[in-house]
Image (cartoon, rainbow over all chains, first blue to last red; front, top):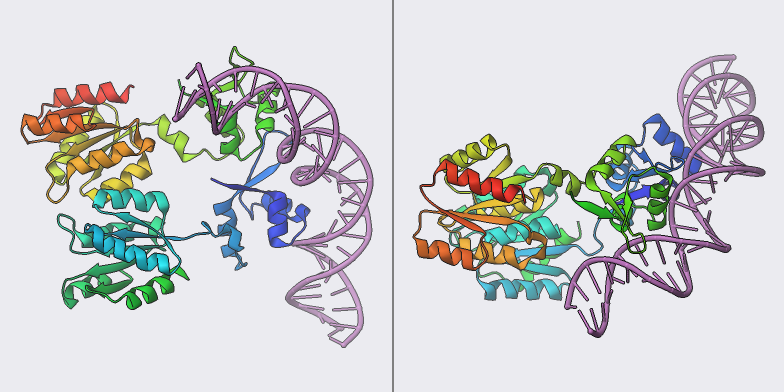
Length: 186
Length: 186
DNA sequence: AACCGAAATGTCACTAATGTCACATTTAAA
DNA sequence: TTTAAATGTGACATTAGTGACATTTCGGTT
């Protein structure tokens, strides 16, 4: 729940402070007032929404974490570690979840940019994970990379219901790197 | 009767600590002082009233405390629904998760006060869920109620590794109500 | 092109609120 | 008990809000 002052918004938009206050007064920009003399505060999310609504450029410093991460979901630790190595070599932070429950908590906690998902984890339906994630608008920007030893048809089905890429085991480090770099730079 | 420190309020409002103290001094925000040097404390309800009075956004983490909820983790929807009925009749809000992944996300998102957990869900190790949850200080106050058709020994083991109560299937609505009421009032 | 006028934005000075800093002291955690 | 983190305080530095007025912008008109 980070907020911005009218002054910060003024400098972000390269506009006079007076103008920002008028935007808020007119209801063009949603904000609220502190009890004292009524200094204005604007929620970052409201400001971003405002910028998008007016097709204004969004400053990098507002775009969330400076270091986007990767969540690796795989019950086989060796495999997970090897994915992590590739990720690290490409310069990305990553976390490993070896079960569905952990994956859910870590996804919610770290808000990674990319999630690699082993479709064939015992006792966990990868498809329903994709389904459930895609239902939540909160994760609409999350990229899901399905990794599995299953056949092509299974991978295609995963793509159909919302995965963004698929890799068949065994995958080449090069292919994985390409996919990660592509998604992490978006 | 939870209270907040001046520092917590400062970070909630994204305002300097000095300012919060001034608000309290001016009577704009109701609070009281500790005997020591007069460190400030503010009742959550007073703070919420203050936020509402000034049309300021109310942080999710405070809304949660206002209406503590229950997360029901069970893959069998009829069972989950029946637990939910009991919860509702006792006056509690509840959410249902039918898989580990969903459970993780919902736990993190709703921050329920109590989680009922079916130990014998296919393809999901209930013990590891308890283990993982207990490792995180964030969920140290979460009450875990294990519900299972397994034998006594399994239930006891669950209690040993961190569950707070156990109920054997089939459970009586009365027993469940008692457990829920006990934990929800803590 | 030049002109016009309304609406939006910028400027300025002044006052009040908020932030900063250093340091003593208390709390809470280990 | 020890130790690190949080809090309160005073003096002072910055920033924000306001009103009145100047200036720019931008569309339509000549």
